[in-house]
Amino acid sequence: MRRPDQQTTTRPTPDAAPGTTPDAPPAEATGPGAQRLAEATGPGAQLAGTTGAARPPDPAGSRPTGTRPAGDLTTEAVLAPYLRGQAAEFLRSLRLHHEHSAPADSGGHDAAAATRALRRSARRISGALHTFRAALDPLWADQLRAELAWLSGILAREHAYAGRLTRLVEALHQLSGPALPAARGVRAAGESATSDAQGRAALGVGAARAGALLERRLTLARTRSHSAALQALGSSRFHAVADAVALLASDVPLAPGPAGRTAEALLEPAERAEQRLLTAVAALPPDDTEPYNEAQDAAWHQTRLLLRLHRYAHEVVLGATDPALTGAGHALDLHRDAVEAAGAAAAAARTPRIAPATAYALGVLHADQRHEVEAARAVFRETWPYAAALSTP
Image (cartoon, rainbow, N blue to C red):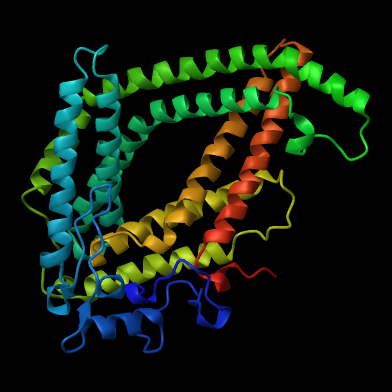
C-alpha cells in the first residue's frame, strides 16, 4: 500500500509506476508491501498525510486523517474503531430512514438520502470484513458480509432504475435534437444529406415512443424494487442484520491470539487488495478493441469492484480514501451506468410487435450508450495515475 507522499494525480513515468504482479508474498523483501511495512513499522515511523498536512474527512463518512504512529497501527487501534464507526453510521442512517419514510409522500428526498448513507456504511463494513478477514472471527465476518451484500443489493435497485431512466430519456432528447446522429458517430462516412435527413425524421418519430416504452418498463421495475426494499426492511432477515450491526457498534469480534493484532494484519491484506487491483487494470483490453465487444464489460466491472475494495482498505489504514484514484473511480461508475443503460435500451428493443421507428430509435440509443461506455474507458485510462499498469501489448 503506497505512502501518501507517493500518491500523485499525474501519471508517473513507467519506471516509477508500481508493479502489477498479483498477490506478491508479504514476506518478500523487495516488494512494495514489504517496503511499505518496513517504513510504517520501523523505529519512530509515522503514517503521515499527504505533504505532512492533515486531509479533510472523506464525505462518505470515513474518519478524519492525520499522522498515525506505527505503534497504533493495530486491529484494536485502527480496524476495530473503524468498524464501530461505520456500524454507528449504519444505525444512524437507519433511524433517519425510518423517520423520513412515514408518511411516504412527505419525506421521499430525505429517505432516499438516508438509504444512500445506509448503503455507503454497509459497503464499507462489508469491504473491511472482506479485506481484513484474517484479523477477524472468520465465520462471523463471512456471515455478516453476505447479509450486508444482500441488503446493499436490495437497496440499490430502486435508485439504479431511476437513474437509468433519467439517463436514457435525456440521451433520447439529445439524439432527437438538431445536432443528431452524425455528431454521435452513428452515421457512416460518405452518407448523403438526404439519407441523414430521413434518419433524423425516423428517429424523431420513434424517439417519443421509445421514451414512453422505456418509462413504462423502468418505472415498473423501479416500483417493484421499491416494494422489495420495503419488504426487506420489514423482514426478520433485515432485523437480524440490524441486530448484528448494533452489536458491532460496541464489540468487534477479532481473531484470537496476538498474531492477528499486529501491523502486518492490516498492511499485508491492504497490500494484497492493491495488487489485485493493479493486476486487473493491467489485464484490461487495450483501447483499440472493438467498441461493441460487450464481453469485455465484465472485466471492467470487476476492476471497479477491486478499486472500491482498495479505496476502503486505504481508508481503514490511513484514515481516508486515496485522492489519486477519485477520477478513475468516477470513470468506472460512469462506465457501469452506460453499460446498464445500453442493456436496457437493447432489452426494450426486443419488445414484441413494436413499431419499426421505435426499434430504430432504441437501436440508435443503444449505440449512443455504447459510445458512452468507450468514452468512460478513455477517461479511466487518462485519469489512472499509474501508467505502467496500462501498457498495452
